[in-house]
Image (cartoon, rainbow, N blue to C red; front, side, top):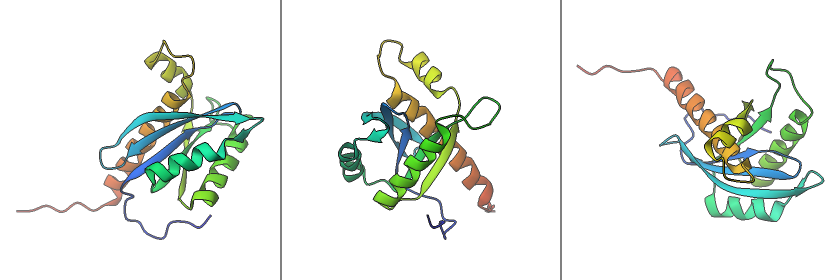
Length: 152
């Protein structure tokens, strides 16, 4: 995937994914407000996502970027789902022609369970947490990358 040539901040809707072999959580976020909301759970059979469902989400939201959570061990090393999540992100970027960003995610499902104790599936809430973390990190990086100007 080509790298972004511009250092201008991304502005608009961002779609986030919590990849899983049976279910993929989806959240929608906004770079301006740095907020995200759970949107959907996409079914996946034998690791093959329901691409028609994902296409409907892209058509409806028209995101400017994609964020995929990378499942990592607590020590920062890769685990069994790390490479499949990367591959999923690359496929998303290729299909929908959006820049892809990865956000290390550890314990997002546990945090999602703490938020939504009564739900059976928390994948969309895990995607929300991943996307919120990315939005905050992205905003912080943009703040430090942009020179500040004082007005007298």
